[in-house]
Image 1 (cartoon, rainbow, N blue to C red):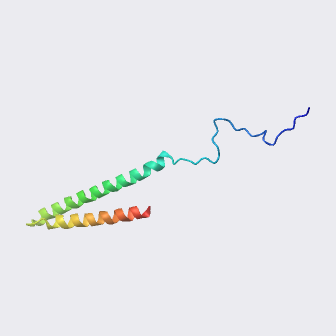
Image 2 (cartoon, rainbow, N blue to C red):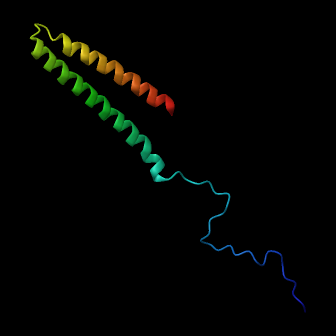
Length: 93
């Protein structure tokens, strides 16, 4: 009795091998990127507002203004600028 060799005889599919059509899960690094991006944006906004407040206070002291006009203006510009940069950053993807 002669045994014919099957065309599937050279397939070496073990139990530990994954099928080729299985969907790949996103890596952990891909899941971490949005958190890092958005937390970095939050720290950038906080830093911008702190810098604007500090500069406004120092200018108000230097010019001895009765009302804190420099602080108010710098904080408004800081908030508007931070929001514009945030919107631009989010719209990129």
